[in-house]
Image (cartoon, rainbow, N blue to C red; front, top):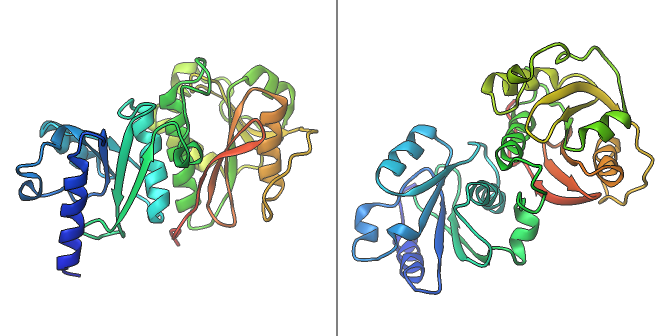
Length: 292
């Protein structure tokens, strides 16, 4: 679909607004960079942060002097895309508490954005939209948190061999989590050196995708080392969950009440990703379309 005059006027208006001193950053959630003509004469290049799904494009934008983070290239709704971009930008320290941000995004495949969200980091919208990885505690690695959220999104989108699957990642307070769980199957990570079972390694993330078909949860240490897969979480806490969430989400929420861990669940029925802390959902990402 060709860009309409309204599309172009909308973008020009947002770029003009972004140039004002009151706006600290413009978060562009798109794989189509703004043309040089659009920003010519506007002192906003230093304010722009791109969130793109293609690593090569990210590298090209960085070479051009733009701040850039990568996000999983899946078809989420506009607001979900903003949530994911905020997670990545906060994790990368590209956004900080108190900063005023305009977030621009649009339809999948669209050349120009059609949706704007204004927010202040640390207030309101993003308190549910992004994980404050600093607030999780110094023992957590922000890179590990982001890697697990991205991995959960991939599992929710792709499933296994065309079939939808669900799973749970339990991150942190691993000694307590292991004490409150039991092994359902042979642990595929047992006996492997720690250097070879860290979620920051792409090969391990691929292995986790395959092992996600196993019943039970993954237990992961704060630094990203996978301790076990196929763990049954023996939780006793009764947690109040939104209607429609079942036993997997109850287990994920419960373990974060009984321990200091954070849990990330993937819904088998919808592919939605939810992050639990202290028994509460602190991040929810709904799928628009799943791979079939």
